[in-house]
Length: 297
Image (cartoon, rainbow, N blue to C red; front, side, top):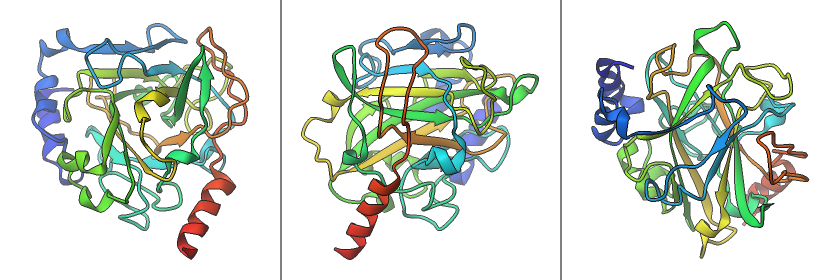
């Protein structure tokens, strides 16, 4: 992405990145100091960011994944977002506020497919003797032969809060820190995109199709980073996509990007890059029961 496009993204009201640090990160020459997890050149693949480059970064694991079925009705996302203009950075965070429909930032389909999430909704995964929470991305990009098959994941920041803090942020990404206690950050500085992941939605480990219907990446975050948090705490998942160069200009130009929480995992192999995840995804009855209880309280 050229600097002009990056600055244009920064100045667009619904997708303003937190600071000019993001534009600096996109300057030629700055990439030498960047940490890229390239899941395109080598596939399948997994990796972590170096110690000291982000809170909890060395312990969180990013990995390619290829699971079916996805699609919104089965995938059951807690965060759905999409930039309204090609070539612009997109960002969003999960909340039931700001809707219905179009929500804060680039959030979409509030509050059916973008909604509140609580720490207690998540499954605890034992992977190699370490306990994790996991979040899965359906990039929903078009497949092989299309320029927009690539997507960069440029920041993820996860917060917990005993109260609903979403409206204290709204559309202003510079206020994302108001969401609560920072538990994990892909980049140490809010607004930086120096640590980033590049994925190719046309790739598959099991021969599945691209687009909506095949998930693309999973993030494992150590549960140790959530020490002191309560299961009833709100969990906020903020993410930025499309800041780095890809053949289509580093943006998402196809369908919605969707994230779901892993809530029921039968098997996660400790070795290899192909993750056999059984019973993924459905917040389903547990989530809606929680909402019903909250409304009746």
